Image (cartoon, rainbow, N blue to C red; front, side, top):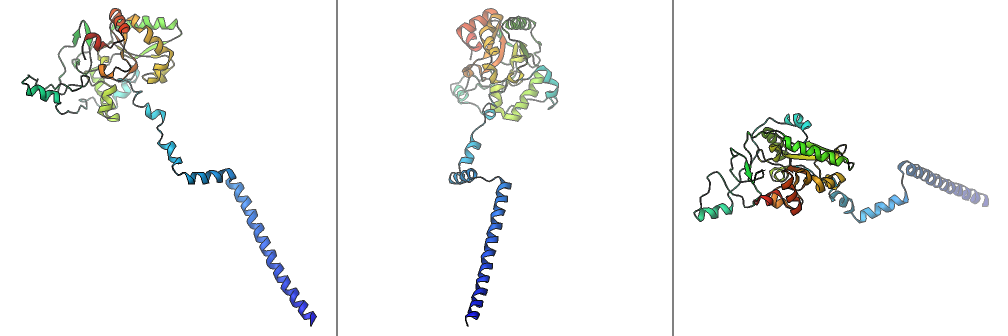
Length: 316
């Protein structure tokens, strides 16, 4: 009787042992598979902790995305008042056929309505802007340029004739050459990378900026055709040789070349045409590279008084 019971118990024990052995083998297989998976996927405890943290704070991933990059915030401020070198003219002119500028008509301002109500005569095709540094609606280009105190003035109220094409001023070029020679003694190699620009070229350039940034933004840094100082041949965009990345860029203002120019350009007849904080006077944002030749006496007076050309001439 005992033998039969012992045999039955032994068979039962063997079955249990086989189950246990099977479970152990299965766990071993799972363990080995896990080790292989971890090694293949580079998993670590730190990554697991980071994953848990990220799930706890879902906005963390978006914080960096929403933060504007330096290039985006500086994109508009680093554009020139029509920046381009003469070497780029042919390539940019191919961008579009020269046409009429993309200038949108604006509604008549309150100032005009007031003048009409008071019985004042208002030119039929000319509307004064509420902002003195804005363009005048319907204004036609003049037959002659505007001279005030012997100074040729060009801004958003005083345009040039369409056919005004004097080319680069020889006097201004000679003055720049003297200025550049003096800068060399201080270890600075200056270059005028953009000077005279024709009316037709300004059409191409301005339309390109309007198409890219919209008219409101373009009007802050680029002149409409007929309103550009570069058409006078007296405006010089100046940069430093071998530092082209700073040309027509706000970063130029932080360079030693720009600081030297700001301190010495007036001695050679040049003024910084669009100073910082003077957009309400000039109509254009600050451009540390844009200089205008006015002659030594006038330049020295403007520099010492720390004023704009408009303030010097008594106009706004």
